[in-house]
Image (cartoon, rainbow, N blue to C red; front, side, top):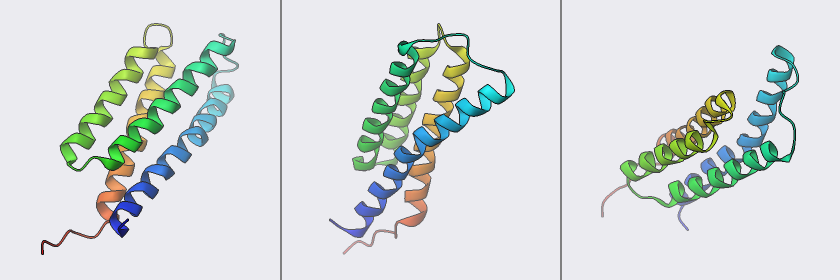
Length: 122
């Protein structure tokens, strides 16, 4: 495994590690500004868990994609899927998790673009 591939995997792994941290901070900020959520139960926790699993799998696919067009397309499909999944019942969570998943994925793509050395053709 070459150095470039390791950098790509590390950047996307860091994005996956930041997802639950930022999600927890966002929930704490919601409680501080608005108050406790009205909806309770296991369904919201399971929905967030499903979104995280889809986020991790999509980032794994993005890490192994070779073209920038494929990476951006996968990120857009992931964001649209989160929006479609959450939008009817949870509009505020839709905005938060849609923007969180797309921002972290695009940040990982940008970080890999900046950190990897340019390819030299031999």
